[in-house]
Image 1 (cartoon, rainbow, N blue to C red):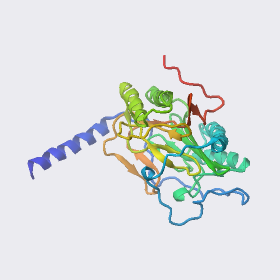
Image 2 (cartoon, helix red, strand yellow):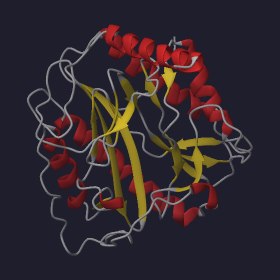
Image 3 (tube, helix red, strand yellow):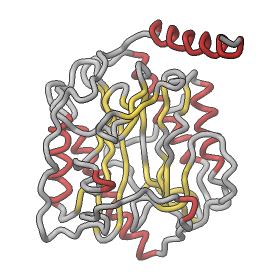
Image 4 (cartoon, one colour):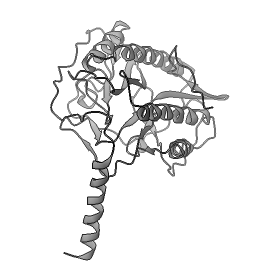
Length: 322
């Protein structure tokens, strides 16, 4: 056994010991232990996005797609889709309560979207099986609604996307179930604050890379770690357009211009997940073992006078940083 191998093996063992010593806030979720029902029906008259029904979908490299400057007409259509996404998210948050399941959240979201003659974007997007993403506890993102009952102390991210008038709306928020540990409550609060810190600096001429700097600085000062594996993105007629919006330091040269519309959606973790981030067998659910995380998301439009939060909910207020 080489000395280099011994050092590497010791490093891995220490990391796993570190994991076992960490505080456990909620009972572990078990891959394959929960029932996922089929996607809900969408009335035939509702217009589908172009990807629906296509067998060989692939995620496109956003670095190869242009950053769109939306005109006034496109911005108005985006505003309508974003408003529906925000209102739908509010409905989903109401359904996230003790004793309900994430399947109940899926029903609330689905019914609200189709009642407005819109399409729940997730259904069949890269063959996702449900109408919304619900990420509970140590699930970082892309959780699939199922029959697991929400328990006291759980916390869940609800990520709502919808398609109306040819444009997508996209936003997410956190909900605490019952009595959530103060450590988790603080993580959720700081994550939302980091989102708003980033929104504050958005205006024409600002490099997109500044978003990652601001979020990382705020999260690090608060004692947390920004997940580097998932990004924001442009949004419009496609759910994902250029550019990638990184939440960690990066070398993206592009600058914001009037008419750009994009999401900011940081995932912030209580501590470093090392190499313990993995995907469930469903091909979607991303878990950071024994590592609590939180995520918030808004769609931002760039105007001459600064940012417009297109998905601002009616009952939502800017965070108090004092």
